[in-house]
Length: 279
Image (tube, rainbow, N blue to C red; front, top):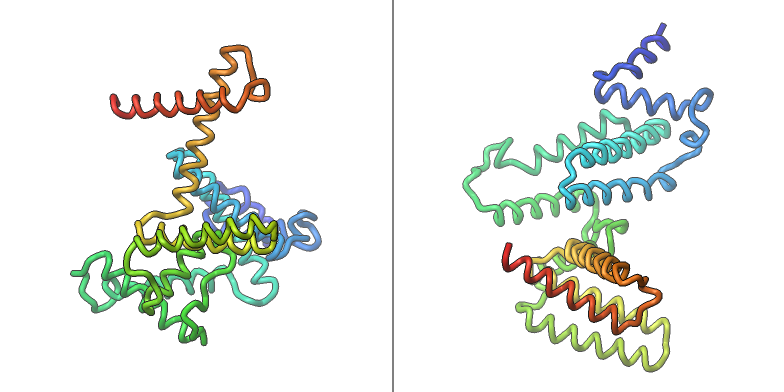
């Protein structure tokens, strides 16, 4: 009888989150589930979770709302997948995960759910949020200034988070001019490593340069990940136009010289600026 009820739930389009949870249980059933799903673990699924989060961000950047709906569903499935495995191992349940985040959001918004006044700026709310998070870290025995910054974050995002923590204890430059001076210094050290053909030193110095670039982004109020994605899109768009113009002349990039493609790049860039000025 219970199996029939579960079958009805799985095929009920209005079954909501319980339907999805039951689908995952069936997929992970060691006797009747999907062999691939049964073999998965936290480590094997984690890369998919990261990928789905990026696909959500991509749909938002493209303002493709139907696609975003689907991508949000894919991301939700990742949470359900991890909680199913956590429940199987006795670590937690979907209900406990929901309770945990609900408790956290209530605790972190005393100006909404508690007695604190809502009459404060967004900047002050950010300061208060960080103070609450610091108390939470202390409760987890994370005493160091840089404790608890997730290792799995994209490198530049994690660099900015580390720098924000350092800035809160005064380990930070007071002005962007000092950061720019440091960029020149790190670029010089990278050039020295290149001249010495020291692969390990080049990687180390390149990392130092990226870290300082992330710091400059923070001082300028720029998200470095958003900035580089914007540039990636720009390169894709402009080179796509270069290929179109070459094709009109009966050529491909491989049949063209760098000088030709560079000239077309400048032309595409100029056309974009002209369109922007007249738009």
